[in-house]
Length: 217
Image (cartoon, rainbow, N blue to C red; front, side):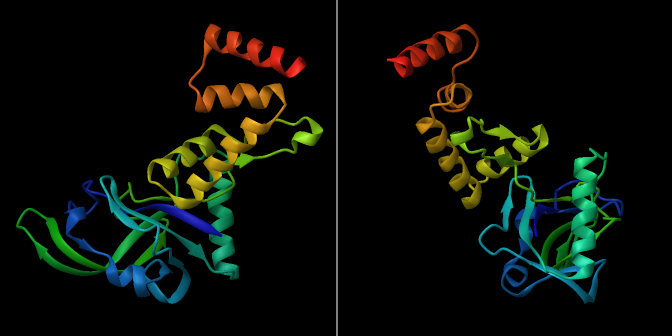
């Protein structure tokens, strides 16, 4: 069970504080830290992925794994259910650790992050996470099925991961490109031309007819 989201952002939180993202030291969290439930370190839910957890322009991006326990599964299922029902809210993240420096205006300049809590009441409402669910379903071309997105939200999440150079997302994108390129299904060809060659509208129709003529030779 994989999850991802922003554990911290530069936005003003409910305590009227902001966190300088470039002042966060996440080394301990990445190497030794856990996801816990509501800052209760007796309830460990999972751990971060060291390769995917990083400081970005948008904030502290965290990706990780939930343990296969009843509590973790319950939280995962709640997140998936909210996503499928297009709920206008998400479960949140909250960083914990030690503040090393702050100014007199409530801005945290430096802090060491040791763990990240999963919570329904994050101090920073922008610190939320998603369950990572399969965003693309590859139907066998032997049955004439085309590669179709499960949902628009799934595609958006997939694109976000590609933009972050997520290894798994890049591998999936390369696989998709190769699969579509080799397919003799017209819908697959159309999707390939749209995604990887930038064709649309009348130009797409012309190119599709050219490809169809070649396939019928």
